[in-house]
Image (cartoon, rainbow, N blue to C red; front, side, top):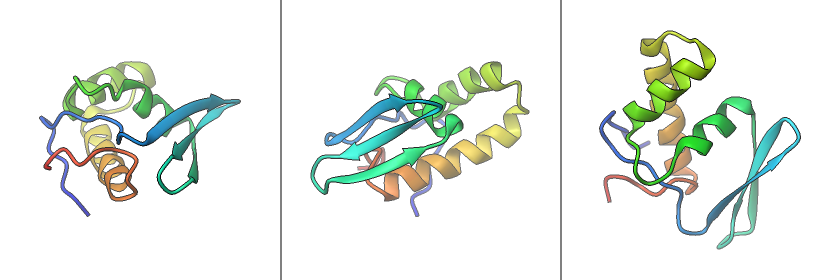
Length: 95
């Protein structure tokens, strides 16, 4: 799994789209037709992924929103970002 550094700028993969539904969201990957369901935390994270913000900037926004310890959130969101890159939902920031 890719290591996501805090200064890396994150963006959705070109063929990924996020749709908000009920208490969460779904992500559709157009190339494969795969559909992923997201919980509220992942939805909030993806809402802040805009191709301009770094992982650290996203974590700051989320720590304000969720009132969670920033160190814990740093680790959790880096792991989430790495998983989303491996699934093809986020573009690989190292590429």
